[in-house]
Every structure is written in structure tokens, then in C-alpha cells.
Image (cartoon, rainbow, N blue to C red; front, top):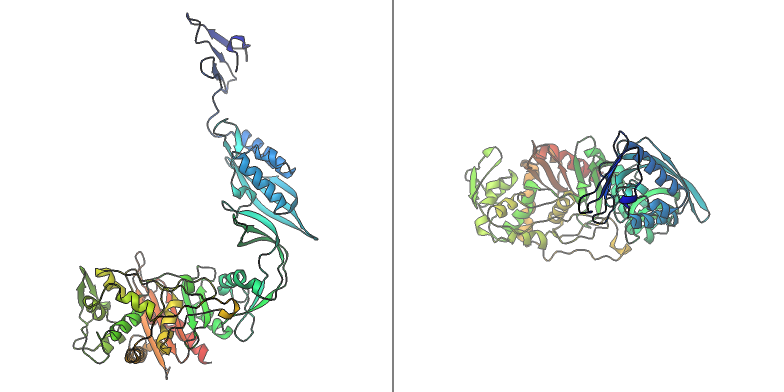
Length: 546
């Protein structure tokens, strides 16, 4: 504690005031013209008040230099003491040296911008008999310690490397899984360089199956989570290892066709599935680096959902292709007023005509005959939607939640809370073509003995036959006629457009099958399905036909 009664005069100015009681002695110490004076008291604990306010430019430069100098010298404890979290910083700085195998490190300080100081890192990594130089840019921020007021480095994982997140660390060693050489069903190579739209899938396949191939792992500096598991982010490769061959169900010719069909579109996604096997033949997304909407997307499917809704109505005897079925301009249910595209109506029409023309009110009119969970059961029990598919890569497997009133009615026409992606809708078309749900796969289940989802039941034979007839009529003379023109034999299709808040145009959907191939596509914010998504699907079907 400072003894104010014995304080010397500092800076040439001091004053002492002593009260009559002898208590309350203060020493006012004068500073320079820039301020910086302080007040100390023998009342209380006598500690000086912590400095407040942002660090000065000089403090920022000096603190950053002291921290970087200590770090580069290998003194983790000394560097950690210059941060606002000494324990965490010491642990991470030490781990960066031992776990990341950083033998030497050079840190070059840049010009500060406010409290932030950029710096370049040049590290020498050494593992076994291998070594490499690892260079990157990082930054730090200087703040005031809340207790002492001293300028310190704000400790964050990004100080070590800008790609690090909380709980993560850097590790150098044998890669968790060997690299893979993915090939299609015929043995043709599928690389990310040649097929960038498969990039995220190929990365995921390596994580899942790299150790199940005949490859050997390389040595990498990579980011791991708090449990030491690989996050998939490689920072530096010391050796690439030997790739192991992984056979997929993809078909290179169809993959090329799928990629060409979506290329150039601001957003689009497409998938092809073989009905007889459930094997995925092609997956494409545009742009290539975008989120994989083809298999992971969660979008309202619009009127393509009417394939499932029609199957339910046929199964329940609530509709038949040649029987009269109402298709008015408007239909109310649950307090909502539903309408058809362009407010059309079909007078004295049949269910087949309503399906082929995609009449919304024809489906809404049957809502009063349904239980809230009828559509959910049909989607799950017949089409396998939402059954936790084990495809071999990460997927969203569709969702048809139980709803009531207007939301239940909206689900019948692919709005409300119903969510699908092209993989789901290609599978729906495949189920109609074959009559039985076969869970899509991209890698043979025999490779890892994973359990494939199986639907609880199939459609009644008459309902299945009728549904195929409805989709064939739609492809021949309904809303899907133009994209499907010229295709004969066992064909069927359904169009869709889904309204999305904030978009000028609906999301365009199209799903179809031709022979033993089914495909689906979505082109967001583009308009009608037959004009925008239909041509995408047609190119894939043509490629399958050879």
C-alpha cells in the first residue's frame, strides 16, 4: 500500500490537505500536460484505479510486439501472461507447438488498424522424417485487462489460425482417413477437379469410407475438434498418402449430363435415381460451390407433392382417374381460400384431368375427408419420406409433419411445412415407376453393413396402376408435356411451382421417370416447373437412354 504521508513530490507539483480530525489524507500527484495523474487515498484499500478506455496506439504496438516475440521464442507461458486468458492461452500455445509439431515459428508484425494488429506466420512443421513450411496470415486485438487495466492480447482461437473455432485445435499427424479415388459404377474416375459439383460429396465419402479402402493415410496438419476428431479442414499437407479406390453408384455420363443441365443457372439442383435398385446415378448443384440442395436441401416441393397426395386419395378411394372430381376456381378450408394458377377451373372434369393440369382445389376439396396424419403416414409408409435414409453420404430425407386445418390442406399441394429436395422427389418418382420404395444409395451398403430404410407397405395394386396412368397422362398432354415430348414407353411426370416469401418468382420443380430411370430438379426463383426444371430432368433422362 502506498504511504501517502511519505510520498515525494513528483513532476514538480504536489499538495497535501489534512483535515481537522487527522483523517482523509490525500496526495494529488501532478502528471505531464497530457494528463495521466492519479489519486491515491489511505481510506479503503489504497489501490490505484485500473486504467480505462481503449489502449493507445503505442500500447497496441508494444503489447503486440511483446506477445509475438514471446510466442516466436517458444516461451508459451510468457506469451500467455500477456493475454486476458492466461490459462487457456498457455494451453493452446503449448499445444500448437507439441500437437501441431511446429519446430520453429517466425512472426512478422504488420501495421495496426486501431486495436487490431495483423501478422504473418511462417512455421516449420516436422513430423517423423517429414517436414514442411506452413505460411499464413493472422491477427490479434489488444484490449485492456478488466482487473489491472493493463494492455493485453484478447485471447481467441483465431490468434493461432484464422480458421480455428472455439474448442478446436491444430494437429499434425497421419490423416484420419486415407484419400480416396472415387469411381463410378463402371470404374471411371470421379475427381473434384473434373466434377466440382461433387466436391462436398467426395469429401464426405472420404471421411466415411477412406479407412475402408486399400489406401494409406498421408500426413497432414489439420483442425480437430475438442475430442480430437478430424473436422475435415486440412491446413497443410506434408504427404498425400496413397488413395484407396471407392466405388460409387454414380454414372459418369449421367453425371456430366446433370452438370451440364444446371450449369449457368443462378441456382439449380438435380438428382437421378434408378428405380429398380435405388442407386443414385447423378447429383448436380449450381453453382458448384453452393450448398448441396440436391441431397441436403429442405424446400417446399409445390405441386410435385401431388404425386404422394394422389396416391393417398387413390388408396383411400377418395378419387379415381375417370370419376368426376371438383376443380373450382377457389376452395376454402381451415379459414384459407385456395386458388388455382391463373384462377382456372375445370367444369365437370375428372380426377385425371385435375391431376394432369395440376389443379390445387381438386386436392383441397378432399381435406375435409382426411385425418391430420393421413398424408404423413402415406409419405412415410409408402414412399419412405423422413425415415432416416442411410444413403452413404449426408442427406435430408424429406419431412411431411402432421398438421391441421389450413396447414394440412396446404401440405396436400406441397406448401405449408412440407419440405423436400431433388433426391427425395426423384425417389418419389422412382417409387411410382417400380411400385416399391427402394431407399436411395450412393455407396453399396455391403461396404459398411449399414441398415437401409424400408417402407412399411406398398400402394394397393389398383392405386399404383392408376397413379402411373395419371403421371403418364401429365407427361403426354398435361403440364409436363413439353419437356417430355418424344419420350414413349413407360414414362410419367409431374410439375410443380412453390411460392416462397421474399421471392419474385416461385421455385420451379419437375419430377419424372422414363423406363428404369427417375430424376427430379428444382430451379429456385425461376417460375413454372415445365419451363425451368423440366429441361434439366429431360437431359438426364436422355443421357440414361444413351
